[in-house]
Length: 380
Image (tube, rainbow, N blue to C red; front, side, top):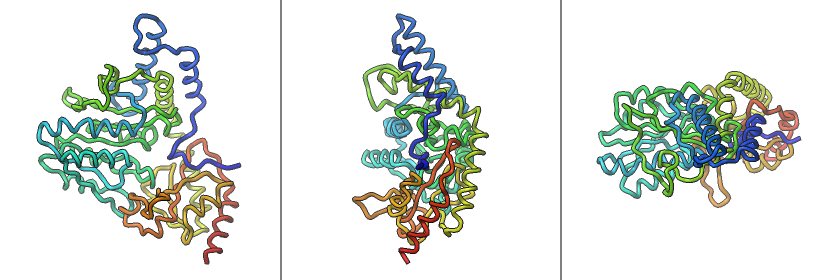
């Protein structure tokens, strides 16, 4: 049986979450915006309960949660939605990093075309951003700092709490893309100095197509965002459209479970990680990213002399894994993340991302190792 080791791309939906989604799809199907009957009122009540559950994970208030289609949309809203305010007050400088998700980097490209100056910080060889580099890059006209919580390719945890602490003496807004860390690395993003947090449901065993942007109040005021779309007053006027009640309820349930079961889930994932590292050590792998700073659910690994595409094809009857280097068929360039860490193109071309969760069963490691050894023998 093929074992799924690509949970960083999307995770299986918890059966308890599925039950709630089905309930609000098949039975409680009311529109949360309909106030003239009980179907709509029950739907609205379910949405607000889910909002509270999501807020609890990040130590926020219910009114600080804006539902979106996922972290990609949330990243766009946080960055592009702040630009009008920045131009109005003469703050047109943004600090981010070279290892961000494309939804952040491409949003920043758009702002560059609008006249913003963007400073992209380079990680160290371990794949994380030194907090002092953020502070050193601050300018009087810095509007926003945007740093992800957990890198989606390497699994390296960024020092978000340390950065937030250093920013307490500065007025700049702080945004964190928490797609890979929300509901897993919980303590880091409860820090009140973080103004905006992007999250996604399908990375925490919830449904696809739903996420949220946390917009914390500071001194009683929310970040001055403007919507990217228009046509309704939903979600404080920042995200128009009929609320997808079943998906929102599913996200709420997934968030609730993430708090209750975080320790148990992380311990189970850590046990899997230790076993994987122990078994794969015979292949003399190279790890891309500081293993001491990676989440329990992910590693980025290169087996010397083997291209990632070759490994994935050879292993496709044993495990489902992804190309950690994110190389494309139309380009010879590899991962912007690994490249920014100073990892060679040769090593990047062999990079594989293995990611799992507390529900993952161990694959046939003997067969896995045999396949890789055979490829290495063929190369030599």
